[in-house]
Length: 371
Image (cartoon, rainbow, N blue to C red; front, side, top):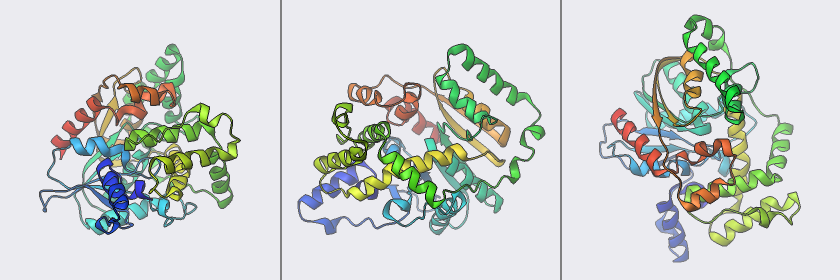
C-alpha cells in the first residue's frame, strides 16, 4: 500500500528507491489516518487539514500543497478503509466521526482550518458543521470545486446543477436561472427542515458487495481510475481501451493491477484494489449528502467556465457567508490532454483543475491569504 501511505511523488519515489536499495527501514510512515504533507514552521499555529478525495488518497493535493507558502503544517486526512480499518457498512456519520476524532487527537481545540477538494466536499462540510455544533471555531472551510453534492433526487438543486454540465446551452441557462432565484428567496424558507436531516446513509452488506463487483468489472471506471492514478503520481499507470478490449470484464481489474506491478513492483496491489472500490463509495456519499445549515463562512473555489455560479447557487442558502473565487485554468500539457480523453468531457475541467498549474497557483495564493 505504498501509493496510499506515501501520498506525494517525492515520498513515494523515496520509498521505492529505499526498497530497491534494501533500506526500507529508512522510511516508516505508519498506518495513521493523518499524514503530514507539509512541515510547519510555526509550532503554535493550528494546522491546515485537507480531506482525502475519492479513492481515499491525497494525491490530488500534491501540487497545491507544494505551492502553499503558509508556515502552518498541512496534514492530510486519509481513509483507513484502504488498509482494512474502516467498515464500509457503518454509515456516513461513522465515517465523519472517524475523521473528526483523528483531527481532534492532533488538535483538541479550535480554531480549525479545513480544506476539501471534489468529493471530499461533503466530508469537509459535515466536519465543519460538527465542529460548530460543539461550540468550536472554524477559522477556514475551503471547498475546491465540490461538484455533485446533494444530487440524489431530481427534487434537489444539486441534481440539476450537475446535469446542466451535460445539457445543451439553452437548458443549462434555465438551471442557472433557477440557481439565481434560489439566491433571492428568503433564507428562512430555503433552510426550513434542512437542519434536522440525519445524513447517515449507509451501504448494507449486500449493497456494498454489489457495488464492489460492479466497479471492478466496469471498463470505464477502470480506465478513469488508471488515468487519475497517473495524474496524481506522475507514474505511467494509465491503461488504454485497446489493452482492455480483448479482455472479459472480470479481468479488467487484473489488468490494472498488472500495470501497477509493472510500473511500481513494490506497491501492494491490495491497496489499489480497495482504492477502486473506495472511489465509488465516496462519490456516492457526495451524491447522497443533503445540505444543512453551516453556521460560518464558506470559501468556495470554482473553476472558470460556462457553468461557473452553479456551485455558489447550491451553497448560498445554507451558509452564513459565502466567498467565491473564480479560478481560471490554463490549457493542459500534452500528456494531461491525452489522459483527459478518458474522462467525461463535461467534467474534464473538474478532474484536471488540481493538476493544472495555473489553477493550483491561484488557489494556493488565495489560501495563503486566508491562512
